[in-house]
Length: 323
Image: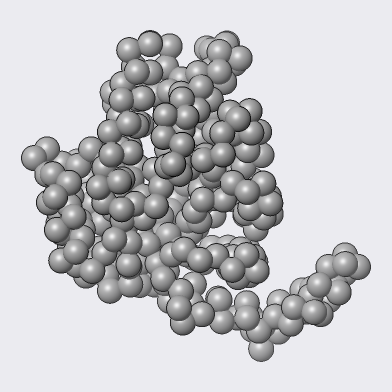
């Protein structure tokens, strides 16, 4: 698909750290330099931007940097998962912390408007728990749902999306799977909240990513799609197709059937690799797999699927992928 465009997370171009290399796998990289590096990758048209930006960096600075490098903003992601929210953001036991999450969400809406972002994304990575008996589950659920619902009600013209994930940094996250998250969103009673389906998060949650994608779309709640890969035991954020090639093919085949109109977003953490190379390799893999997906004869595949004929479906996929 020659018209396919790609977005990326700004974090891919920053200094990546882990629990051992706590000073990072490279020098500090600020917001504006990361935008420059994203532009130099040569494959991205838009960015997912974390907010707040670096100290002293204004929205005007970011707007100019994006324009200078031919980039736009796909969404703003408020940082509701850092040390300040270590015991929860919207679901914190502390009312002042819950209010701080709401305030930051409101600020992020204004930034999203200023940068013409399509939506505001919540990744509530601290909204969960670590131990049995640590929380009252009903209260945790109420706070997690009410916090995002209240933001959505305050800005009915703005689109919001939740990126679900099974765990990390908490051992258990409230927004853990597609089905759990969709049930919670339906209980909000709002029309402007949906999901980001991240291929790697879906693998990590032991889902079938293509099935999770279709489920979310069928509920009218699909806001964005992110691609990466992992070994299913951790959110490794490897380059696209590095491990699960056939499942990535099925996922991209499903994206094609949905006629997805927005850029496909890359969620990569190149700890030891050059981020531009990781982006280019991922884009090359996606393009190759989308070309393979286009070779699968739709009528024959649907006939095989209607009969639950696994071997015919496998032959069609093999022929498209390997012949």
